[in-house]
Length: 310
Image (cartoon, rainbow, N blue to C red; front, side, top):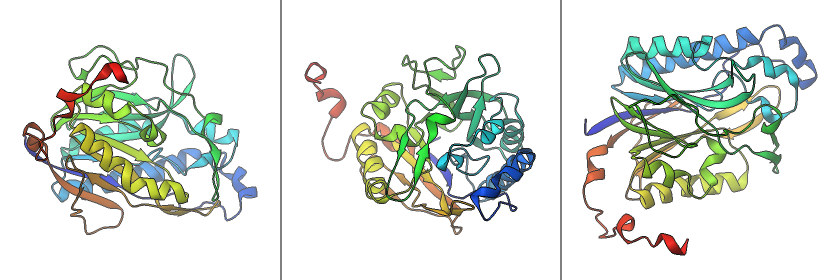
């Protein structure tokens, strides 16, 4: 398949009964299944809309099964984590992938059944509903900017290495950054904060990635400035496509505004045209076949790199 129609979601928490004030969040303690269920239903709906528009691969948003709870430190949200193979979210997304014939990248909040550790994880699901594997976020931020806090290390840890069983569908030798061989092409994932780190996209490109998805929840002035630059540079430098998604809108009770601005970056340093009529989806046609052609600039960065000086 040469040209692939791909989609990103840019949406917010879909649970309708969020409290107006943070002091009232505790009433959600017994409703977390409902919070998850509302968001899964919402995202399954977006998968269906994308499929009707001819999309063959869709990446949902970071931690798509709930609000971005890392605005505060509250142990209540730990119960939202679930199994990345048999949990309710992956089960529903796998069914949606099969019913709609779409490859789905589903970022969830993972609870490892064996170690009981929690991770920010993207599950890659083939269009027949088979779970190919997962990627666990490698770099975990903890800090604050002029708009708010992001206390992610309170909720989950970083990937510590291999996270998938050996399979011909898992490409590359880098233990942190697997590439997934799917029916639409070779897909890599770099979740949010990962995008800032030198070598992440390089590792995915070295394993053969043609399309990298970077689901994110991001806000703040510097983040907004860099958002329009980082993906374009990496896509050009490594000659592949990158789809960067961000939440769009604000979520109660924190009312932090997420700027959206999701887009696909192409190998020649350009944004690929958005073909979606809806604000909660970004849809683009990606010519993966063009990646095999010579760089129109005449550059051959892969050939000419001098690794000993880095």
